[in-house]
Image (cartoon, helix red, strand yellow):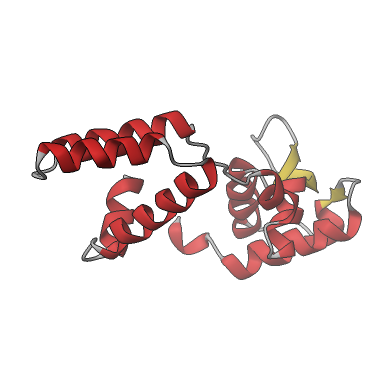
Length: 158
C-alpha cells in the first residue's frame, strides 16, 4: 500500500482540483477511470483534509467527484496560506507570574540573605518592558544551555 502513496501524484491531484475551485471536479474527466493509485491517493488526501471526494456506493466502488478544500489550497500556496496567519501562537505571561518565578529563583539561590532581599526588591520594582526583556534573555540563555536543541524539540513533540 505504501508504494501507492505518491507525493507527485498527490500534488498533481490537488493542482487539478484547484483549477475548479470552489466547484467539485469530475474525477473521470481528470483521470479517466480511476486507477488504484488514484483512489488510494484521493482517500489519503481526503483523510488528511486537503480535499473531499464523492464516492459511488459509499466507497464501495470508485470516486466520481472531488473538491479541494481551503486546507489543500493553503498547502499548494507553500506559505501556509491563511492557516499560517490564523494559526499564530501567542504566548502571554502575566507580569506578576514572571516576577513570581524570578523571585522564587532568587530565593532558591545560594546568595546571602541581604543580596536576595535587594534582588527581590529590584524585581518587584521592575517596569513591564524590563520584565519582558528579562524574560526574553532568560529564554535565549536557557536555549543556549540545551546541548542538542533538535533532540530536545523532538522529545517535546512526543
